[in-house]
Amino acid sequence: MKPADTLTAALRAIDGKGYGAYKSIAGAYAFGDYTLNIDYVQGDPFATPSRFRAVVPPDVARLPSALLGNKVQRNAAADYLNRRVYEALSAASRSRGSGKSGIIGILRPGQQILERTSLQISQTGEIVIRLVGGLPARGRRITAQPAIAMLIEDIPNALRRSFLPDSVDLEALERHVRLAEDSTALRDQLAERHLVAFIPNGAILPRRSGVDDRPLPAAEAIAFESPHSLAVTLEAPSRGPVTGMGVPVGVTLIVGGGYHGKSTLLRVMEKGVYDHVAGDGRELAVMVSGAVKVRAEDGRHIASVDISNFITGLPKGEDTRRFTTDNASGSTSQAAAISEALEVGATCLLIDEDTSATNFMIRDARMQALIQDGDEPITPFIDRARQLFDELGVSTVIVMGGAGDYFDVADTVIGMKAYLPGDITSEAKKIAGEYRTRRSREGGPWSLLRSRIPHPTSIDPRKGRKSIAIKVPTRKRVLFGTEELDLSALEQIVETAQARAIAQALAYGTGRWIDGQRNVSEALRSLGDEIDREGLDVIDARQIGEYADFRIYELAAALGRLRSLRVDAASTA
Ligand code: ADP
Ligand code: MG
Image (cartoon, rainbow, N blue to C red; front, side, top):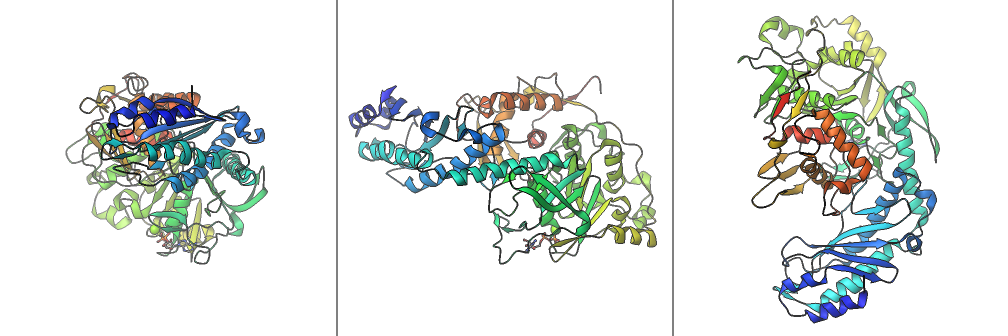
């Protein structure tokens, strides 16, 4: 390791030279109490910025050990510090020449508390911070002065402000960690209370806009309030008892007039698989971690998925136990999404009529009379919802403002009225008794899903001379090798860094776990276990700070959307 002033000297020595001379500054530098590593030096000022890594020893950071005892605490503490580093670096980031000269950055956390590779805290309390920066140039000539200002002053000052014990707001850090712990604890209590979701009284559900995930300002939002009959009190380790609405396991309907807040409630449940930051409005609104939003997505690719529980007897005689298409319809895409979620162990399905295929959700008595069963390939979801719960233990929460036939299969009916929930289960059941639907039940017994073995050769991240070419412009869009992967239907991906990690994990896991022997569930579970064991860094040998943790459901859903994917049926189905 070299002292920091050798970096100053090295920069002076290459002043005015061609940009390539920057390569000589790679290495580790002692900045007094911590180390700054220059891990990667960009090839020119317009290319992907250079990568830096600060390693802060435990006795310098002096983080309270009470906040480092387990993974939930360490991840939350790291998430907190990542936010502070982001603010400090943003203030220090400015153009200092051509291209990306002078730009400094780190992953920007959203509203969820997530594990990210951009800032990690070890069990001993060592902090590793990974940032990127554009080394300054005029044209393609190195400019030493701004480089020295950036590397010797601005970045160190910003980092120091974010991690030195004197500048860290320890109370805020502790609140952040306790919030994540409380939220996790409430989520862990759901199963034993026979609940799938919990929304605390006072929560703010609506967001500012479809593209702004922050809460609607309090003056415009109606705070959440549980109906009496659904109110439960759970015990949070730090803040004690928390009261709110418990959504029981089983089949739950959310009904109500248009624009009364149904989809907003469902969206909060979707995101309840994550912990939210203070001030978000969704703090302590939690969902069982096996909850998966499924929706229609016509045009998507489907690779040999068993959708036969929902669809059989297609006009061209396709085998729906291994249904393959490059251009799915609304109903087949929704059926596939459900099968893919169940394949990797989903315990609760979340469905919104706004994003569902009508013919997948319901066929009423008149339509049944007109189109005979033999001419209709679809067994609508209404005839599977009970079975899913009674036989497989899989709950569903369905937003359904348009079809009262669903009253027959529901355990709980939540009515949204002017953004407030009511328990209207008995009213709905009474109506179901008075107005018979006349529709007849469709579909036979639930058949076990066929197991699928993905072919490693069909997952190919190569492009040109690059063995892994992955670009992730947004959380909805991944360029994977020569293929474009559309993740826009995966509403539980909340950060671009998650989409990036999912794509990288697929590339990493192919050959290793996706090996032509293991089925989808075994392969992805093994991959997920390895990541849990070794840490998220295992997916990329470059050890870069660009990834955020993700769930197996989104990983499976991304795999299933690869248009190149080919699978075999397992010999033992
Ligand atoms: P629905 O699905 O019942 O048609 P939405 O959930 O889409 O209704 O909500 C309609 C609008 O009302 C949205 O713009 C949403 O942000 C807003 N909204 C939802 N819940 C609340 C609330 N609690 N307070 C204020 N506005 C809300
Ligand atoms: Mg809606």
